[in-house]
Length: 305
Image (cartoon, rainbow, N blue to C red; front, side, top):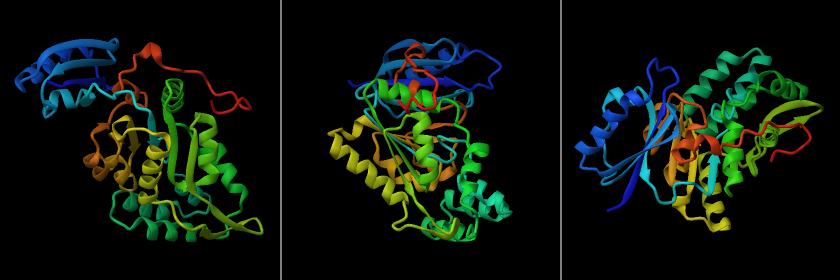
């Protein structure tokens, strides 16, 4: 029999302790035929593992699903050696293109297109070109202003990357956004690499175009496949995380695909979803205990790692 694990990470909005639903989770496992159930706290009242022998096809009651983020997976290859992550609304709290559009006075129009693209209602390439064209004439210095004033790391982002790197993982930031932002986010979080789209400028202003080819969902998937081969990593040892339709191919192709506060299509494609917690939830899903987290703060000039 295969050893599997159910990880529960408390919804931070709970007004009751996580321990109050552990018995219910254990009962759900037993009802599904699980045996040899063992309980191990990764962080008291925050994250808990229930290892068991049995089938992965387990349906948890809504009482548990609303109280905690959860992941059910084999214990083998649990700590991943490769992570690919989306940037906008995943590693950072905003959509950079929408914030640039705000400085151009057209945020509402651009945000509407972004939302539809992330839901999979528009072709990504077409939506990307349309939005970039709308930024034509925006001064180059607005990018730095946007980064300084609007870009904030998602809670747990640096801790996620630093902890995985400390344990030997390779981390890649793959974004349908812009290199101006991914390069800076890579620096402050510690990602090993970043890949995204490069905006074009003429006389200090945006031309309304980006260099081809556009980094889209296929390019994200291609990065995953390339890194698996280059690093000699098994697919089961990889993870991918994102929030939109553009992330679905890499989410589906990785060993553990995670949706993060995601659009419905991305959540449906994922092996597990983070709906309530921050990015450290992905560390708990991998079996890291709270005391194993690397919470070293970023020091400017000291490098991302």
